[in-house]
Image (cartoon, rainbow, N blue to C red; front, side, top):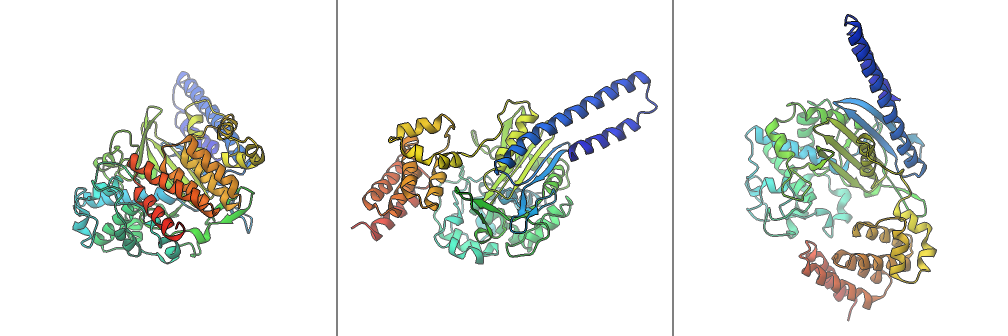
Length: 498
C-alpha cells in the first residue's frame, strides 16, 4: 500500500540517522518505529475495508487521501474515470472539485487585502460601480455568505443559457436582476454562489487579470499545484474524469451537458495530491499570512459552521477547516485538522458521497465506532417500493423506513422523491412528497415540491392547495425562499387555475 510504503521509507531514513545512538535508546526508537508501522497497517486495513464496501455497493468512484503533517498515510483510487472507454481512476486523476474552489477565491481576496488593494469592509459598489443591490453589502458579507445575495443558478433563464456562460461578466446580469434573499446584510447566513461570482468580478477589476490567470499565478504556481486548472467541459484535458449520475434503476448518465463553466464559485479541476499541496501551503506564509488565515478560519456567527470562504467546525478537539463541493456527477470534501495536522481529501465522479467517505476515515482515525457502508436510502426505497406502497398510511411508511434508516433531512427525502418522478413513478413520488411534509410539516419547500408533483400529475386542485401552503408556511417561518414560492404560486394561477 502506498501509505505504508511512504511511512516505511520515512522510518528507514530516520533509523539510518541514529546508528551512533546508544544501544538502549536505539531499542526504544525501534520499538516506536515498529509500533508506528503496525498502526499504519491497521489504519490502512480499516480504510480499505470501508472503501471496498463502497465499491461493492457502487457508491464511490474517485480518489481518497489521508496525510499527517503533509506525509501521505493512505492514498488510493477507485472506479472508472471514463466508463465508455473503461479507463480507471488513478491517484493523479483530475476531478471537478466543485465548491471547494471557493477557498481559492477567499485566499485571493485576503491576498489583495494584504497588498493594500482592498479592505474587507469596502462596499461592493466601490469596486463594481454598476452593482445595483445596495451600497451596504461589503466584501466581508460576500465572503461570509451573509450578504443576502442569492444564487444565479436559480435565475429562470440560466439553465437554458448555461453552456454560453463562460466568463464572470456573462453571469453578472443574472445576479443583478435577482432580488435579495434578505435586506439587512450581516443579519443571517445564507450560502450564496452569486456572492462568490461577485468576488471573482472584484478580483478581475482590481488586478486587470482574468480570475483564472490570477489564481494560477498567485495560488497554483507558488503552491506547486501543477495539476490544477480551470477548463471547460468541452476542453481536452489529460487524465480527466467524467462525472456520472446513477438512476434508481441502475442506468448511468454522464454529466457533460449539465456542467457549468468553472468560475470563482467553483468548478476547477484538481487532484488529491494538489489539494494536499494547497493544504501544506496554508500552514506556511507562501499564500497568506497568519492574520489572514485567522480571518478565514473564524466562524462568522454562533451556530454557523462557516468562516470566510472556508467551512469551520470543532471536532475531536480540533478546529476542522476546509470545504465541501457538489454538482451533477461530482462530489468533493477537504478537511484539515489544525491541531493534529491531519488532512483528509476525497474527490469523486459520483455525486453526494465524498463527505460520507471523509467522515468514515475520520471515525477510523479517531477510533469512533462505525458500521460499514450500506445501500443509500433511495436504493432501499426503490427496492422496497411495492412493499411501501402497500402499507396504506404515512405513519406505517414512516415506521417501516425508520426501522432501517433515520430521515434527518427534509431535503434528502425530497430529492429521492424527485428521482422517482424521473423514473416516471409519479404516483409513488407523490406518496414520498406527502411523507416528507408529514415528517417535516414546518418546511415550506416540501409543500412546494408536492404541489409540483401534483401539477405534473395533472391534479391541479391539489397542486394549488400545496403551493398556497408553501407560501403560508414560508411566511410563518420567514423562509428565505418566500419570493420563489410566491412566484411559483402566481405562475400556476396564471397558467392553470381558473
